Amino acid sequence: MSGLHVSRAAAKRHSADMTGKNIVITGATAGVGKETARSLAKMGGNIYFATRNAEKTLAVIEEIRSELTNGSALEHKPLALDDLDSVRRFPSLFGEEERIDVLINNAGVSHETGVTKQGIERIFGINYLSHFLLTKGLLPHLTRASGRILNVTSMGHSSARREHFNGPWYGACEEIHPQTLYGRSKAAQIMFAKALQRRFDRNSIRCTCTSHHPGGVRTRIFDTYGLALKVFIFVLWPVLVEPPEGARTSVYLATRDRPEKTGGKYFYYGMFRKGIYEKPGTELVNDEALQERLWTVSEELVGEEFSIGADRGATVTARVS
Ligand SMILES: NC(=O)c1ccc[n+]([C@@H]2O[C@H](COP(=O)([O-])OP(=O)(O)OC[C@H]3O[C@@H](n4cnc5c(N)ncnc54)[C@H](OP(=O)(O)O)[C@@H]3O)[C@@H](O)[C@H]2O)c1
Image (tube, rainbow, N blue to C red):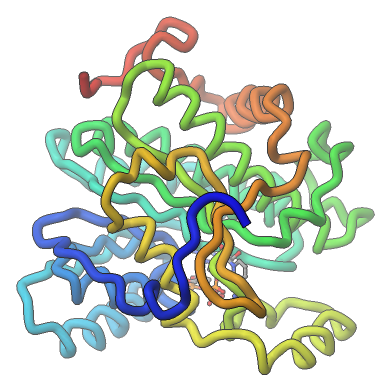
């Protein structure tokens, strides 16, 4: 095994002082996202819950607040990831001069078929495309803080097929198995992290973007699986971990020293050999030409150019020298 390895015990012990750090987490109402919010709040971070259900979010905020002994701020910022207009509005919920230290693109669906408000295939739209636009919108805030972007992806990215990166992007894509669609969305998150990090590096921007598989985690994400895959998960259930352990890779990558060592890389929380491992990911996600083509397709789908620094001549508003 090459590259970074953090043992299960070390990942559990890991802590950092996040006092005063501003952290945006999508999908923080449940599962991995909720536990990530809890851990980072206990470390002193201010948590912005980027979520769609106000009632559910406020209940989670109250639960976490009741456990805090520090002055962390916990705040709901509405965000529906199946609607690009909601994503486009989201950055205006922050002051222009505000800093965001960490953005965790965590929310996700597994086999939730259908389309988004804009008619885009739903799994790709929620898991990847909305996060592409969200990252673009928050980049000035992140750049100001030399921030970190974490894409919570999946080992399921290996189900992606090359031909589906030519589309289709619109419509429910019922002819494609939902696991293949999930794989496409998760592969796209890893490719995005790599392409974004390349732009940061080329422009000497001290932000980082990583992607990671959080482990096999006992959450509700499997509820939309068909019967055969539900049986598969039932069999695997004993080796899956509880959400606090599923949050450990997010917490570690959000808080570890020397984030520049992790930029662009893919990490994996082991299913059998528990702990955090650096992994190469599949050949597909490492294809630079495909990463760049996905970037262009994503710009077309959201209807906005996403240029950084010298890349295509545009500028990021706050560049760190
Ligand atoms: N669990 C695993 O074994 C596993 C394995 C590999 C990767 N992952 C990845 O880990 C991440 C978290 O998954 P999880 O297992 O914690 O799932 P989960 O418990 O089902 O939580 C999913 C979260 O995403 C939010 N969400 C779903 N659709 C949304 C939408 N349209 N707009 C806004 N928010 C939306 C949900 O919000 P609501 O509460 O409003 O529904 C919820 O907060 C996902 O990206 C998933 O792909 C999980």
